[in-house]
Image (tube, rainbow, N blue to C red; front, side, top):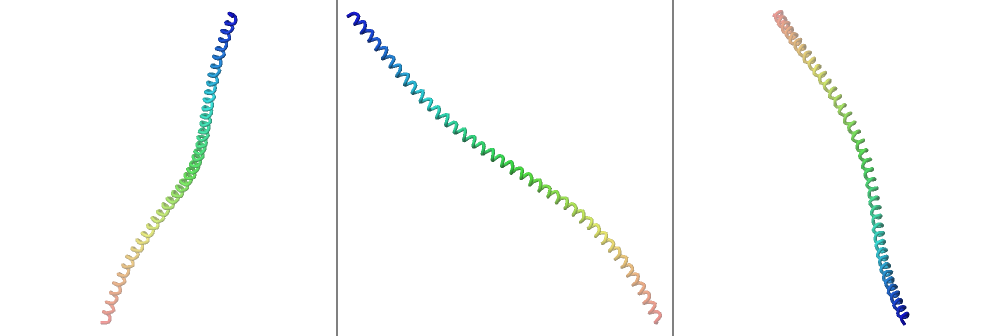
Length: 146
């Protein structure tokens, strides 16, 4: 009987130990499930971040394209500015040439006017002299006729 009682105690202890181990196994399974859930959440978060990174890279590429297009446009505008400046400089040069020509023409015309005024004065003096001579001759004719 004593042996049987000892065996019963031993069986009871083994059942208790087995029960404790079952509890530990249940806790470990629950802990493992929690960790699986955390892993899934982290994988989802990583996938979302990968998507966001992809979107940012795409946006960056689009902005690089815009920058390139704006740089090309700016270069074209620089060329247009240079062409317009060259055209403006050429027109300034033409204006200076025309002003010089006009000034020379005005000086020539003023010299011609001065010459014509001088010639007119000389001719007026000649006319006056001829009129005086004619008057003298008319007086002599009148004297001779009388």
